[in-house]
Length: 309
Image (cartoon, rainbow, N blue to C red; front, side):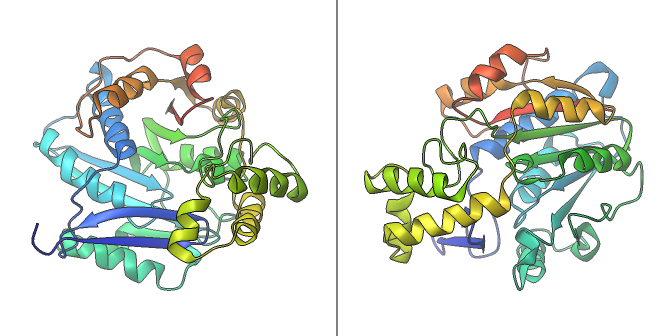
């Protein structure tokens, strides 16, 4: 494909995302997780009580938006499904995480302006400290979404309180995230690395598995020339500073404590997607609570939670 290039964006030492571009800022490949989340969105707005009305403006907030891949995919896909309404997607990032990187906002806005030049991304993308209120007015959004974000939120109770504040009455949130039950830390790729509560314990686990070639050490070695000790040092620091893994039950409890009706949904559909090896977006058929299935899945993969205001 002419002009194809692979760009690797490193938001900070803990966060790596890979996007394919055609040189004009166009995303050519959609992540499985993005396709899954957007399928969940279609499913929720196909429910009778949430049918999108002609002429309606559907406002969506991507919390922990990174460099905008989910925003771009959402605008590209959802407009084709909700052709009689306006889709507005906003992004929010916290200063202590991705937004703390120098040139973060400039890089993000440039990527999105290349793809969607008629949108005022200066207004759509907002940044705040994790201790501040979210920089949006109350009752502004119909939907909030997040991909691999909840495990990084230290004050998850405050997160859900702010989420409820910015959602309209009847609004929903869809979160896709790994839990403390996961057998493998998804960031380092090392089994059990996130289970230890001490730097010493994390270091020993990271060192053992990395020395055996298990986890992401090999790619870090090839790409950055890391030694095992450099890899261990980076992820010991990362796990301590930037993660706050909780059990699925604990996350559900905090969500309900903030006033949400909370359900594990679409997790069977995610497994079917893996089996089909598909990154297409379509409305799922399952709409019931899958609490037991999600608890089993959480050992091996991220799970999906739907919160209804």
